[in-house]
Image 1: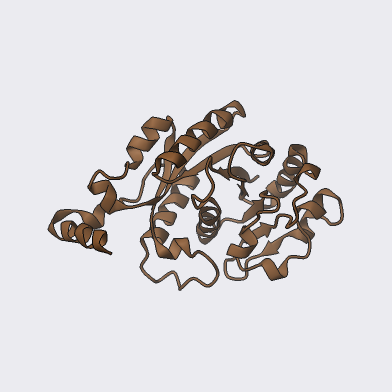
Image 2: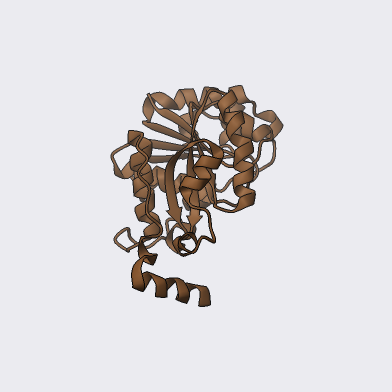
Amino acid sequence: MARSIVVTSGKGGVGKSTVTVALGKALCRRGKRVVLVDTDIGLNNLDVLLDMEHRVVYDLLDVVHNRCRVRQALLEDTDTGGLFLLPSAHTYEASEISAQNIRVIVNSLAPSFDYVLIDCPAGIELGFHRSVAAAREALVVTTPHISAVRDASKVIPILTSYGLKSRLIVNRCRGDLVMDSEMADCDTICEALGVGIAGVIPDDDVINLQSNALPPRSRRSEGLAAIEILADNVMNGTDTVYDVTRRYRGLFGFFKRGLRKLV
């Protein structure tokens, strides 16, 4: 039976959908079967990130209206074995989809997969509650910026009221700014929010441009290395995090920090 995990955020633009796709791929590389469920009605992005937009025939709304079975709407990623997507509707008809609809769909997928990752709309409106009601666990994505952390602090108590155990993913963290005390580190953010850490992902172009057009995995990337650690943490319940400050320590690190400020 699959673990149903909602990936959410208080603020938009923190990289939630990109993290969802990257995490799904990393879990598949560990031999797991993963389905991504896009519940962001009208503002869906997972099909674009996975380069599946042209392949969509049926979507979430079609399943809800019984125009197709759930299996008919699923799309398999041609580059990552074991990864599937249930795309969201392109038109904004959110009122036609209830929390019970999403719950039924997730429960129907659970026996065939190891993980159901639910990409949740940002904020705490109807779409958020509809997505959260179908999950048993939550990953809250934030960036180290004060506005994103503040919005995450409003989301976490609501998740707790649903009985979900929440863990935090700090995305787009810059090690040079952390070393210079210009950006909060993950320990400070977790302490402020009162939740455990699931992963820290550095600001990295390979992750920011996540798509099927990515270079091969063999290319060195801090972001991809951090995603691999995140996947292990999700699977095993551990809290190891990628050290974003490693490159900026010592004498050479001091010069790297100085150079980055100049570019």
